[in-house]
Image 1 (cartoon, rainbow, N blue to C red):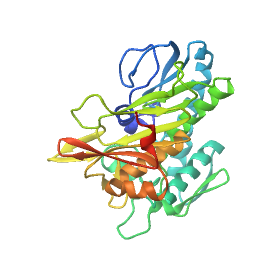
Image 2: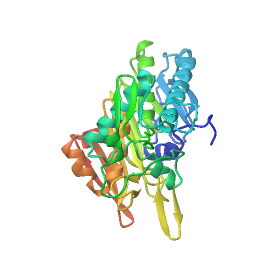
Image 3: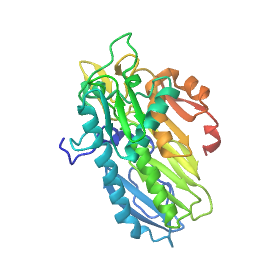
Image 4: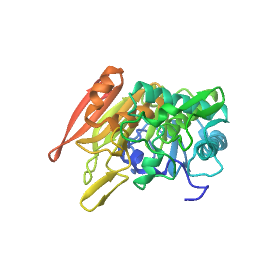
Length: 338
């Protein structure tokens, strides 16, 4: 990929197949598809991060005036945090040796959040995992990988003001598991600043909602069935003031010599995630938190529910169970299911 391509390519299909189905009115059914129609809404759509975005507001909302601002915002995130771009801040940091490098306040903010989730998730979210992702064919980051029995490499990373720091040469930072969520939160801020109080934003299958659908109910989204050959939804979710992100293994995987390789890496064993886990959806007040924890809990596999309960994370786990699915919820997620 060249510098014009995005840092979120390896999560694109995952998000589209994992969270799916935008519940507003007035568009043709596709992924994300419309759950139901009426009353009328206004929508604007665009492309970013090798996926699509959509803003839905009540019919009187007139969101078109925000298109240029949203496109500039998303382009800025890409310039700062894309490992696919050799001219991005994160690529410059990854190519540098041990020490510190100045970055924008926004990159520092996201990097600090990534390291916080790494700590809180006991390392299941690993922002130093980029070279392992690349080893299995899902990313561009080259650098050091952790040795068995050694401390995780993210321990060598830090944020000091508007500087990223690393104590070892070759250590890299990958923000792909959290930056799209931050971009979605900033899109929501733009709508709020413009006076919109009721809206639903979809960025590659991750969603933020504020207020209500024009029908007077919460916005509704469906979690897609994560089984490879299945179609339709595995549940419908009420979303009023918060965000949902889904991570899963249905897409962005490949088979080789009878073995399936997923783009989600188990950082403790340095291999793609295996086992019964099919997808994890996380509800949170903001999309960046939901994005990061969805990645962490999927990487944790069968350990995910216990980890979510210990950190009070609201999540829906879908596990393969023969030809069916087994559902497990934590943190009150079931209250939001229809």
